[in-house]
Image (cartoon, rainbow, N blue to C red; front, side, top):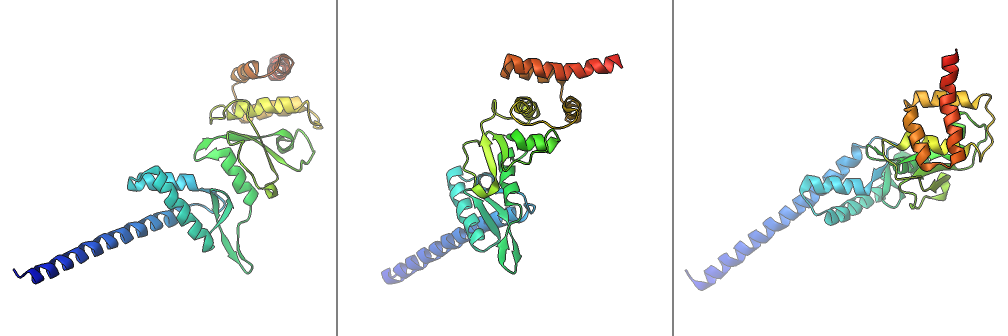
Length: 248
């Protein structure tokens, strides 16, 4: 074969290979974008979209390195936010947006951010505490300015508009121990805030029943993490109520 013809064939072959690679790369990029967009679309309105969670799903779906998946997720989520499809609530946290005459908006932004501090997927990582929880369960009529949340993410930066105050939990929070830790915090907080319900002990007993807490297990938590005087108080309320049942 003539050398010039061979050279032409060689160049054509290289161009074809380059175009195939380029098309393949574009197809992969398009697939990544589609995956992130579909993940966002499948998220219910009002539910937080966490960049880390999207990245993990992307890495698993396409067998990608997690570092690369995180970069891709951040790029595509930012692109969707720039388009008004989602709103950026804080670093790494987004939510689906709704369009109005004034543009895209996200109602309940504080609730969505709070959800990221209370849950990580299906796992509970935090619980409400302090004056806001006392008010929520009816022990106090005081309306606090801030919502207090004990969470494993207590070092997180929370926008001031949310009115959320973070604190370090007694121990790392899990789905199993969260209701017990929340109850221990409640007993502690009763000595710090005004309790103005008519019968707080009965209300607390009902709360324990409603949450299905094991009283013995609750006291075990109390003996491990509360002071002696706090422990005595919780024992009197928890088991004192049982004695009333027996007397009746």
